[in-house]
Image (cartoon, rainbow, N blue to C red; front, side, top):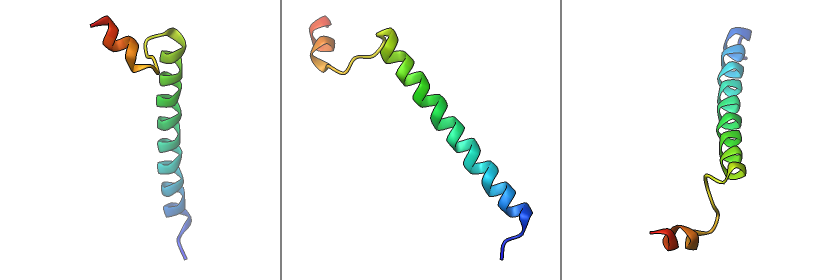
Length: 48
């Protein structure tokens, strides 16, 4: 059976990864809300 120290380390790693994914997802959502990104590729091609 795993000891508590190793389980705390694994939990910390998973928590850090979860927070990083949430931060990136929040930045992407904010980018879409601000209009920096668009889901339609045709608008990008038309502006070139």
